[in-house]
Image 1 (tube, rainbow, N blue to C red):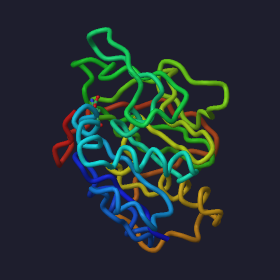
Image 2: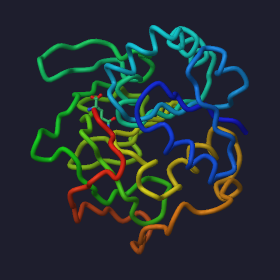
Image 3: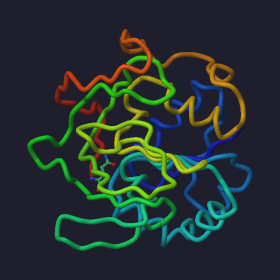
Image 4: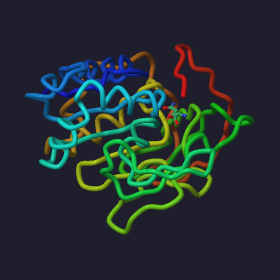
Length: 232
Ligand code: GLN
């Protein structure tokens, strides 16, 4: 299996590392041609306005939009979710469709405010046992989701992991958490392979996940300091 990682700006290398750990070949996507032969595509965190401009100038936007219409599975994290959203609201009260306009939801950029720019919170994710470490970096807040969108995790009452068919999006960064399970679940689901068939090796030591399945885990919450800069 080959998966594209949009590599115009932002935390794309971290997605590629997770994919390698799962035995999936990552393909850095910078030009329309790079999309040929990929079975799924990941849209990383970063600065959504910058990525949107580069998507347009590189020609990847049109090519990617048409692959998505044809059913290419996609997973957007943070800025990646903003690109996929039907409606984006910015801090200046403007609203506009995301550059890829694929997911029926409204998202408010940078909505946690300066006091809580980056933090980590334990999440209960549907289909994943125990706690998943949610790393939020200048995260957006999803304020509305369409009726066909599944909410697979919430934080503070807001959806943080969304799925509509093979379109997935998270306001947090599973690729920065050291935990492969969200990527694994997405890849298993969109490829029709079982969870557990993909994993080859772990990325560092897995975080503690001691809660019983299905239990909701609201905290503890602590500030998160990104080792590598993920601006946005
Ligand atoms: N704040 C960024 C934006 O609105 C997203 C942050 C991220 O991807 N970590 O584009």
